[in-house]
Amino acid sequence: MNPILLIAAILVSWLVFTWLLRVVKTTLKTAFLLALIVLGLQVVVGIGPDQVLQAVLDLPKVVQELLSGQS
Image 1 (cartoon, rainbow, N blue to C red):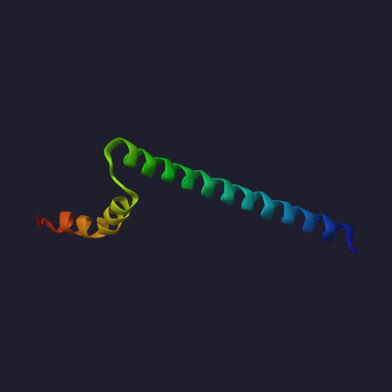
Image 2 (tube, helix red, strand yellow):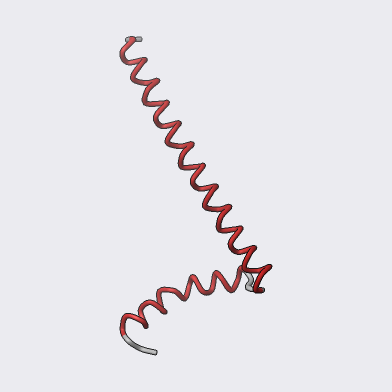
């Protein structure tokens, strides 16, 4: 095998591996933060995960109503 090709393959593999680690790390941080927020809402004010999910699903409708000027 050509040594230049081997070095290029190792370099590309290393870059893909480090990129993948960054993506996984960011995903886990985001998932942990969301879980912490939902748990905090449930413990502090009694808002459950189903209510949070419903509010997120209703968000486009609320924004559309705000932009159109309806109450």
